[in-house]
Image 1: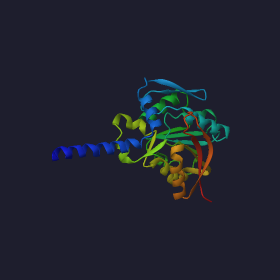
Image 2: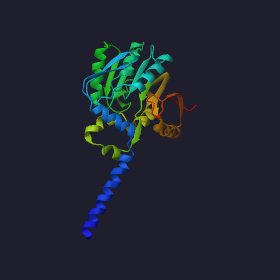
Image 3: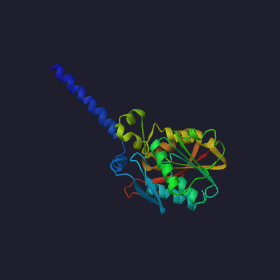
Image 4: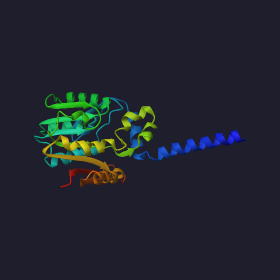
Length: 254
């Protein structure tokens, strides 16, 4: 009987830990991930009348948030003649759209090798062969020191939500690569942008990021911790699900 109770207790603990971890996952993100990894590749998506090819289920496809961000940048004259960098660039839709709207130089970096290959394919698709750079690596580190003080506009589509490293490691391996587009593990990407991103900026350089409603409080807390300002420039319920997505500008306190 005692042996049975110990076994039963062990099962309860495992169930508790499992549900605790699952409770931290973003249901919207998980539905999106499931739909993506079951798609047949290659397939095409369109953003502001620009077509992009997605050749691997582990490459994050641009969508409504990308379109919202790109339109904001173009409408506010933030790309023409600029040195433009996208951290966590995915298939490089923002960079390519920036180049087609007059950016002087476009730079992308992504931790995912699948995203980098997808970006290369899309650069070829759009005939962009000059003044473009791609780096496979984490955060802003791949851009250092080559672009110190040279970036006019630095952007990042920050992952929708945050997970601890232990929680992220609990995600099944087949979903981990694409999950990085949705979960900022230990807030590593946003912290890197806040702590290192300003070193990349030119004299008039600016940093813009996107955030979901669920993550914006964490971003504001980190800005306060690092003595930065966070200004909401645009907000829209792009998926009509109540989860507003925002465009923010991060600046140093004066």
